[in-house]
Amino acid sequence: MEAYMSSIGSKLQMLYTSDHASVVSMNLFVALLCACIVIGHLLEETRWMNESITALIIGVGTGIVILLISGGKSSRLLVFSEDLFFIYLLPPIIFNAGFQVKKKQFFRNFMTIMLFGAVGTLICCAIISIGAMQIFEKMDIGPLDIGDYLAIGAIFAATDSVCTLQVLSQDDTPLLYSLVFGEGVVNDATSVVLFNAIQSFDLTNINAVIAWEFVRNFLYLFLTSTMLGVLTGLVSAYIIKKLYFGRHSTDREVALMILMAYLSYMLAELFYLSGILTVFFCGIVMSHYTWHNVTESSRVTTKHAFATLSFVAEIFIFLYVGMDALDIEKWRFVSDSPGTSVAVSSILLCLVMVGRAAFVFPLSFVSNLSKKSPNEKIGFRQQFIIWWAGLMRGAVSMALAYNKFTSAGHTNLRANAIMITSTITVVLFSTVVSGFLSCE
Image (cartoon, rainbow, N blue to C red; front, side):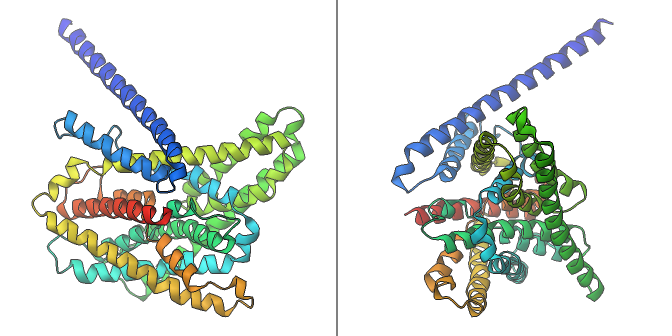
């Protein structure tokens, strides 16, 4: 009996210690988030840094400190969780993107945006997949099948245009902002849909039937996800208009808008659709219909609430990516051949550049053929900016790479470790270098 009670006591002590460690980690992480906001604000007028790059650099610096304190055992305060990213952090970012978009410019350039975001992403994915397959098979990085190469294409086709968007103005360059912004969101949605479609099919013995099923599944996910987002937005507008919550409390209006927005994303995930595409179009519809049916105070509150949630989520993601970049577990697998990891990262960067160029310039030419006004045509300088903005890789690429090449955040195979470390390298390099040059 005494031994039993002692065992329970030791377990409770371990549980208490574990909970206290989690509280300490969360305190430090929240403090770092505050530091990112303060430092980003102080550096805002210099135009050479923004909160995203600041969070990334602070994350790397914190990772180094933790690595030294832990004796080289860990560099993270939190363990990466795909659920944390896809369920809690990504929805407010994508929804706010749709909610804040200038709809007139977006829909005026809708066909060009879809051409870049959907068709262009497929072209980029194909080029990266084929290039990786041809080159990596000649390198000793470990066993990868055709599904892995297609997944690599989808992972590195996902862009992150946050840094460029922060220095582009919707008022000064409406066409350019609309194209870069619209392509970025549609590109992320297409990449995730494509990645999920690849994961759900056995592509080792591909034939015409499997290829057709793959295309059909991709189009089904794309169209139904869009319709679900539009439907949820319209339902929210109808409920708020008919019940008129504002006559009693603006809190109910705000709460219903936030919950309906989140519900659209969760419904998409429930039915195995694309939550990104659903919540984006839900944001567009809610900003056009629901927002105009609420009271004036609710309009101000929701606009700032969605922007704040998106802002904090973005900083959280970049801060974590910076800390996880030094995770010793992944780098231990490639420590015996650092040249291979560097070579793979360089090849992937080159393939990303080639993949972008392969669709931005040809599709811009196709788009210009349908434009009558010279002001609506995409000039070569604008095409170059669109190409450059799309070179950045960010949190979506990281999350998809973790989904494909890790198990609960851990890596046990050398090939998988190389792909994870290469993804981290590409994300850090493209975000910092491209961000610095874009902000100049």
